Length: 199
Image 1: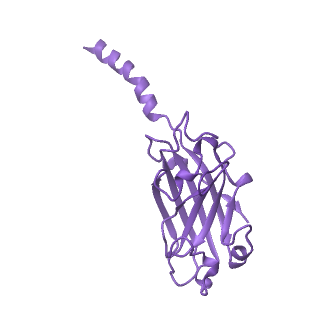
Image 2: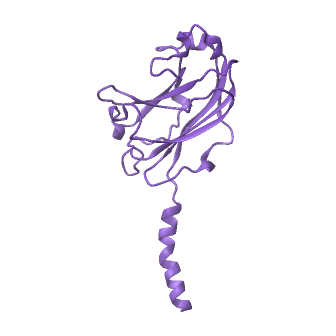
Image 3: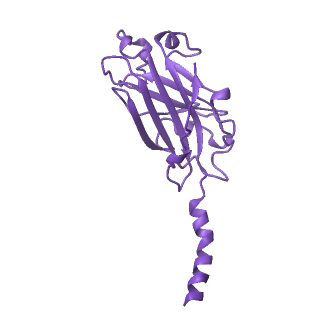
């Protein structure tokens, strides 16, 4: 019986190793202050913060469909609000994937949780569930992420348009997105100890 148990244990080892294999990666992790002046002067679009160049993971895959399937996985969104303007006005950041090549609308967006005060907010989002996710040609990769500060009114609620914009600016946030492939669950150990600080 002991020998049989040893054989079964050895046979199970490859399966255990496969279950422990972690193919997740941090797409970006940025911390920055954002002011009304930043929102008014961001180009090409206002209320945008652009994550590209050194701000986005240079080792992200080109093909998000194979050999590892990120397209049908999840993204773990973590928002840490370090400073929030007074008034507890509902705020959200729209997180837009800008592909190397798109179709239809040409890009797709998800969101952070809506928040009214400083704190940490996290959620898992299915990659097949967010707005215009099918407009991205996932096999050809993502070139940048556009982060857009808004109120809770919907797609066009850009914070810089508000007459009461003092309730949205200035703010300091840390935003992290971790890509989780199909069949895996988010591993919180992937969160970097320190964010990329943007001054």
